[in-house]
Length: 234
Image 1 (cartoon, one colour):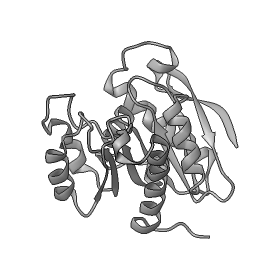
Image 2 (cartoon, rainbow, N blue to C red):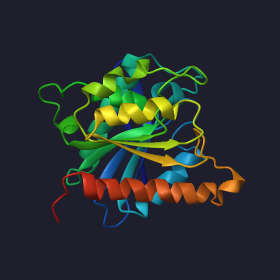
Image 3 (cartoon, rainbow, N blue to C red):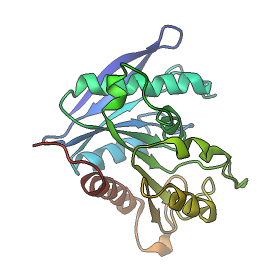
């Protein structure tokens, strides 16, 4: 079932919308942020939430303030980070008995990594409930400009991290991402999708469809949560 809700980011940023998809028997709740150019109702986000639900993972999809206000330019990093923290708080309130995961597509995953690159402040009970981070296409660098400047915060993340990346992703050169994940081991797990790009579109010659990739994204996330993280009771 999908429930619509709102939560407050801050007094200055105001409220944003969210969608809670909670399948029967869910064992995890993933706080799922969108990418820079498309909001929580984008086809990729909706399809991913449906596939995750089929694998026992509930999701809380939410808007960043700029997307809520239909502005084209992303908010400053401090506002984006505040939204991630507020979304985790909303998820913790909506599902007090489910363990939490956090992450997102591209920009959403990157901003989530910034939030968790430092220990949760005192009293941040909701942030402390997050067991791991999931990145659906981590934007390691701008397109065509490979470097690792954005990787600094990842070295400070102490939670387990799952990197789901397309082999043709122009925002994550695998010659840089592979050694980065090796350096982050055992906290980092890298799963590469052959011929997929940053949007997880695959070439016809791959023999699989975009729908197959979405199913694999969800199955891989569920398998990682089951095998790499401390299991919830029940």
